Length: 115
Length: 113
Image (cartoon, rainbow over all chains, first blue to last red; front, side, top):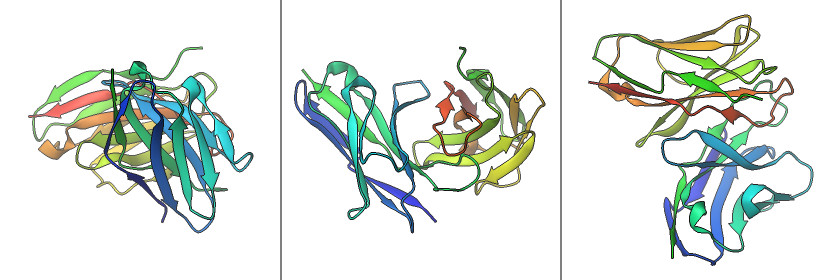
């Protein structure tokens, strides 16, 4: 069974500082990987996805993530935090080659941005 | 293009009752998945429907069921509600190609009292 671990349930950063959110997955073969963001009382919005093409993936709102097979990681970064980045972020995996759409999510990391 | 629409947005039910939640996917999407989000358990996959057939299922009791109609709209039903069923229920639709991103609705907040 696949699993996803997000290190740190809460992260506090200063406005303008680097945002780094960690995600490690457990899977026998590299899965599809996703990062989603959730604002209060909202659904999830896709930031970016890895589907076995380029290992460095650029997403929306200045976020990017790098797939590292040797480390089974897919960490999310943004060079300069903005107040609007305050939200909860979820890493998710989907089995490669499997029929259907079934996401397994990490526990989430809530980001607080300090002025 | 309209996004995924979930109705109602908020719902309060009493223990023992049943509830039906509705999800209208993005036009052209035939896959609809349901997730439960709680503070304690996080985001958990309930089930996925594709072309009116359940294609994947999570580890939830039989009280949780769903269906999909010919227009791809989906409903999920929870019978004999328990306090622990209080959660945000999220619906997501996906394009016909497999393992692409899921587009989420805003969710239905269910409170069981």
